[in-house]
Image (cartoon, rainbow, N blue to C red; front, side, top):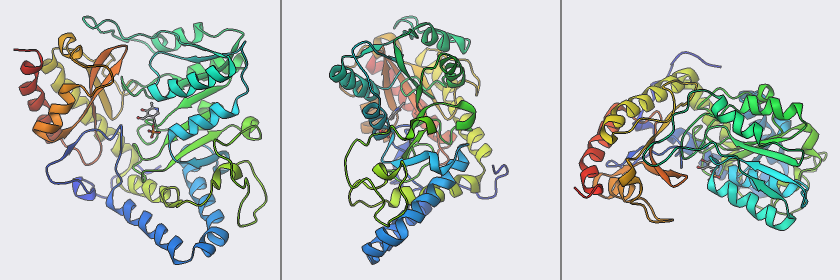
Length: 406
Ligand SMILES: Cc1ncc(COP(=O)(O)O)c(C=O)c1O
């Protein structure tokens, strides 16, 4: 892993329009220009001779990209397959598990909404049941304060029963931006013979990911988020004991067009004709972050998130739910909104504070929701600066009285 900074990096390396203050890399992370260029070069190679590309170049190129990614996250390329994003990865896992009416799937109450929908749909088809232990977030008037990792792992572990067929857990949650103790949950699950699927799109790059150490059964991630690979790049890690059981979410030839010997990834590597440029650009995205220095990336973006936390807390009159430590959060932070502002959201609608941040101030920041309580989430990447956070804070300070009807 690279340590020292060798390459200055900043906003000029991305393609934002002049007025945009972008504090939502956590939802949709754009690529730096150099990665965009590499992606375009791969597409040009495809267009120069598609036959040559798909039949003679594709297999080696995709293996190289998977190998590079695998090394970077403590596993091997042969245990990974590229998919469009974490959502597709999770759907593949959901298709592959054989469930019946006596089975339970354990998804705690901080999990991502779309992931809940995937498993609800599978459970409706198979008769299996979703068991959802409450980690909780407190009430609107009294948000919860987490103090120890066991506040999160214990409710999950307590909910395991002899019927549990799979545990699904975020590595870093979306709405609350909390690092979850996945190692401990995997350790206990392993002792009890229960597979674990980690929903990890926020962990990649934001923390030092080592899949061998975690030893989970499945790991689903999007690479457009913190790694800043092109949109349309994600991966699924599958433990060797599951690889032969994997079923694709779409059916195509199920083999390499180039005539390589068969392997478990075949069903997913070729999903009909498509441009694999986002996958093949992943090594360039890794090079970019390593050029800056991974530890520098993590500390610089954490310091910005920390700055956002300390500036926003007094403005919102709220305290973050987690201790002020890198053990609990990395490059993004979610601060509870005051109860009266939180309640202003209409179901399934964008919160008015988020809307006004963009409409009035050209700031993209997210208002998230967990248990009906809203959080202002700020995501910080290398193109952000304290000035962006200051702009967010002064906009929130200006908008808040209106949101409270004052
Ligand atoms: C925790 C979590 N899981 C899954 C996803 C889905 O990611 P994607 O839309 O890239 O598939 C997200 C997206 O924000 C997320 O935050």
